[in-house]
Image 1 (cartoon, rainbow, N blue to C red):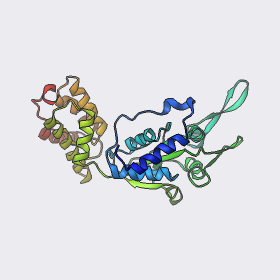
Image 2: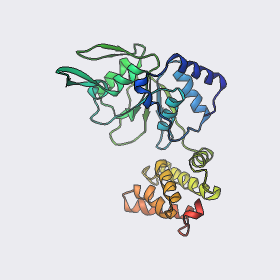
Image 3: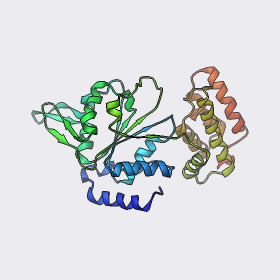
Length: 295
C-alpha cells in the first residue's frame, strides 16, 4: 500500500497515540489481499485521520470490503464486521439483556464493543438497515459520538473508533439512505475494476501462475463486467471471489473449465443466462487447458 509519506507518518502517530487493548488484539487481522488504488486509499486514510467515517458505495466486485479490511490493518485497529439485513435492529447492534451471575447484564453487541475498544466497525450493506437500526447510528456517527443504552449507561466512543459503511446498488431488500445518515459520512464512489488493477490483484494472489493464462482470466472477468454494465447479464457471475476460488482449484489440479464452472458459471441459476456465460468463458478459457497450462 503505497501512499504519501506525510500520511504514513500521521498513521504511525495515530497508532502510537491509541494502542490496542490486549483483550481485542486478535481482532487486528491481516486482510486476505492488499487494496490496489492509491488515490482511493489516500482519500480514505485522509478522512479517517480527520476523524470522519466513510461510506464506500459502488457496483459489485469493486473492493469495498477489501478496502475496509486494509484500512483497519493499516491503522492497526481491531475490526468489527456488522452485516445488515432485514432483521437487524438496535439490540443487534448495541446488545441485549442476558442473565449472568444471578443478575441481568448487558450482552454487548458489535457497535458497543467497537465503540469501547476503538475499533473500526464495517457496516456492511448499510442500505439494508431498518429505521430502528439507523436511529442508533445517528448519534454514534455524528459529532456527539455517543451511544445511549436504554436502562444502562451513556457510552462515549473511543477517540480511535471509526465506522466504514459499504453498500451496493440494486440488491433485493436495499433502499435509499436518508440524507441525515449520508451526511454523517465522507463518501467514496468505488470505481469498477480496470485491466491493470485486476492484473495486479491476480498476480499478487497467484505469483506462481503463468502470465498469459492469467491475462485471459482477467479478460474473462472484464468481459463479464462489461456485459453486466450493459444489462446483457446479471451481476451474479461477476464474482471476484469466485474467480480467485477457481484459480485456487486449478492450482490444486482441477481442469480450468471445470473450476470456472464452479466459481463463476454456476452462480447463474437461469438456464439461458448460464449458457451465455459458458459461451463467454469458451472464448477465454479453452476446453483443452489443464492445470499445467495455467500454473
